[in-house]
Image (cartoon, rainbow, N blue to C red):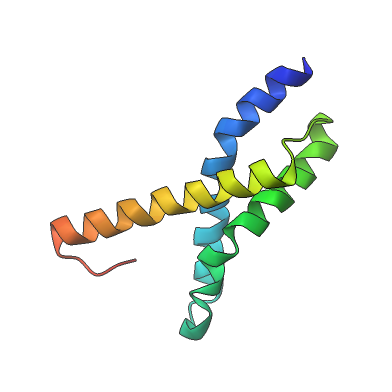
Length: 93
């Protein structure tokens, strides 16, 4: 059972971290000088989510793997935003 939770969490982490990052961007919307800090903190957020998840499921991916998955999730989200803005000529949001 332990490996099954870990397997599913690997796929959920790249979804969870971009959601947290997008909400954090909304929180600091009045301070544009902090925008770069939010996506750059994705690996730390991934490791923290994994740490919190380890209490719930009693399994952990490890901080390195969680950090990589968190960063990949934010990278994919930012890539989609850039492609969308290039195709539709809308400003980035």
